Length: 292
Image (cartoon, rainbow, N blue to C red; front, top):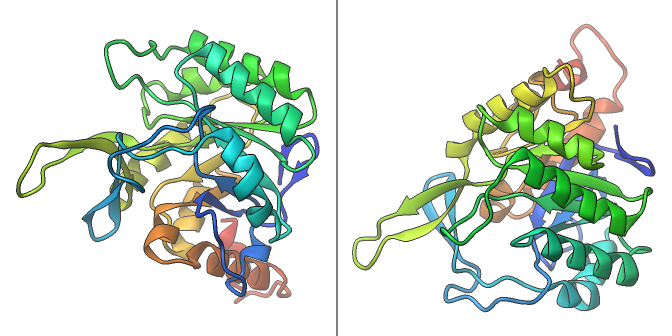
């Protein structure tokens, strides 16, 4: 499956929000790609460190006040660790506006162009009244800014918010801006009420997000104007979940929450895919069900 001019995935199962240290022996070499945690240009200290709260058996809240690493730390410290698994690495980036996207893309093009297969532009809605207005025009201009800095060869995946009513317009804008693939979806704005203390704001991921993300994938994959491959992400824990996304039109999937809850899950699912896909096709062969 082709996600960019020079990026062909060996496997539809990818790892998203990858831990900076991935141990050997868990099948990560079978992944289609590794997508990093989302980074910004300058590191941002956070009051919650990793900033992930388990709010249900298979759902997480990614808090808004978590620590976020900067692009320089990613390139100097984390990227070599992820590259040693010998699969394509894509850097997930976000910024508060067009100049911010342009700045971080320019840095990555200068300092990491030979080390990464592409960039994932994480498009999120404004968290405060001072934030930008998320419109198709903003998406198009943000993607254009990143594309202009990266040049024509690197893959550019745009991760869109979980808004089924609007995801087609945002996806089309990303395509117009120069994206090579779309990902649906990122986290859903949510709130957690602890037993004591103030409400905790953040983004919901995992099991609770999957039905919404599936609908977003379906909307993008069935839009006649959108010609880009779609990556499904949200609540993937089993091979059946992978099949569900592929049935809705996804070309690949990303595992994130599942990996956080069960380290090595993405490698196991990728290994299962590799083994199943290599089996001879027979009437009983379940390999066909992966692409059904």
